[in-house]
Amino acid sequence: MKNVSAKRPRARVAVFLAVTVAALLLDRLTKLWAQAALSGRETIVVIPRFLGLTLVHNPGASLGMGSSMTWLISCVAFVACVALVYLALTTVSLWWTAALTLAFAGAFGNLIDRVIYAHGFLNGSVVDFLNYGWSVGNIADIELGIAAVLIVILLLASVPFGAKDLNNEAADNVGDRGADGR
Image 1 (cartoon, one colour):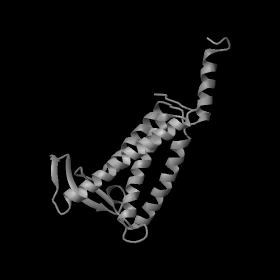
Image 2: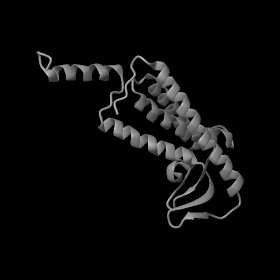
Image 3: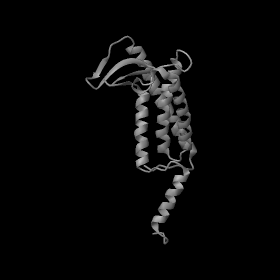
Image 4: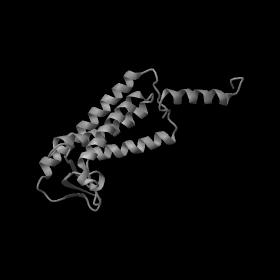
């Protein structure tokens, strides 16, 4: 899992672009489909008690929290997107790049909705349609969830994030072999 490319920034940029385009397209196309196919309809049951399709325009964050603070959610999402792009492009690991880019795409997909469906400055809502019974979400939310799981796995696997981590790992490996190199 320690796929590290300290000297290959082009590979990290390529991963960033590929994951971003694929994830944003999937999110955007499914939201457009949901608005066309589910508008004015009752919940369509896909898997009883587990998954349905219900069109919701959510002004809040997860589980509708912060519905009256849409502008703040939009600002936090913007700052998070900028930070995620920076981190994704400065890491030395393709795994970290992919995980952070997936998080960026999810956050950016929902931020796009907040801009497109705004009823004033930074006062928009997110298109949700995947009804789990306890919550309604979208593909961007799934991307954020997958990214979070990947980040936890990368942390648990001690995958180096930056050049400093690589140097520390190399020094640890040399130290483990002893003075005679064995």
